[in-house]
Length: 429
Image (cartoon, rainbow, N blue to C red; front, side):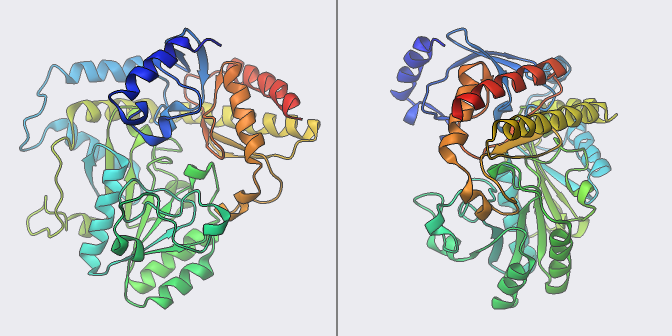
């Protein structure tokens, strides 16, 4: 593949943008500069077209530049842009849809990004409990803010220790965040007992998708609910990724467990900026948007007409369930196909995933927590992804990252992907 124009544009970008990209995970070993995206395909400035399974880290659930969503956005542009006071009907309709579909949602507030929503969940939990400490799980990601940006893809020597994600994080924020192994209820309970009356919230990615796809055990999630009820802790489900990709009710509707607070973003608006925090009425009324609320919330772009219109159109497209039925079927085909190829070629692989998400781990054994993934063959994992990209199948060439199927993918796309995967796996072998 030719990459000369992408190199030139990236070099230009580095003169005015640190590193040439606007988010750290966008910088790869090979420069990419994009000019077009539609349906299940993306094209770079050099004319290389890829079948896209990255989907911008997951927001693209209907397909790139979905015409129905874009039409709704275009219509929104003919109405009020931003007035900055009061409310619009679209904002109300969006909150009504969230309350209608999400089992735990009794009220909702709109933001622009998932990090904003999880940040507000931290503040709300602390504000209503008067406590400072948080529990998160090793391997989970909840946004860029100080309180939860730690112990994500930690090296082996950092397991069981504090592993901040960035320079500049406040020591107090790091100290007040307790790290526990995922799917380990006993360790979670012990952390609570070690800090009696101090835990404000437990944050859980409904599925830890930032490390691929590690499914929560049912008894673990039900146990978290019991622990939070017993100890007066706010249970937060981060559904920024699982959200409307795995169902309009979120993954909580699959688990049958209601958190106190949930956060959504990404697939809620098919790539347009929109995020939601939703939960119990008595908690949500503690936000300062309500009279007497003591937890400040603000944001110039909250409930923006473009994001709200995109979200409403995306929800409407998903409501009859046919898209979920088809993308889940394609996901099953992909996971089974990858496992069959690897098994036939004698390559160790765990073909993980749920619904429209698939993640090949190059390892054997169970995957129940991040620590299990330390056995993943990183070189083979990245080599497989790079080999797919070189053959026009874009899978983010970083280890243990998830891949996404959208409504724009077809059975023929799955066939092509599996045929290419067999070629690439043979080169790895």
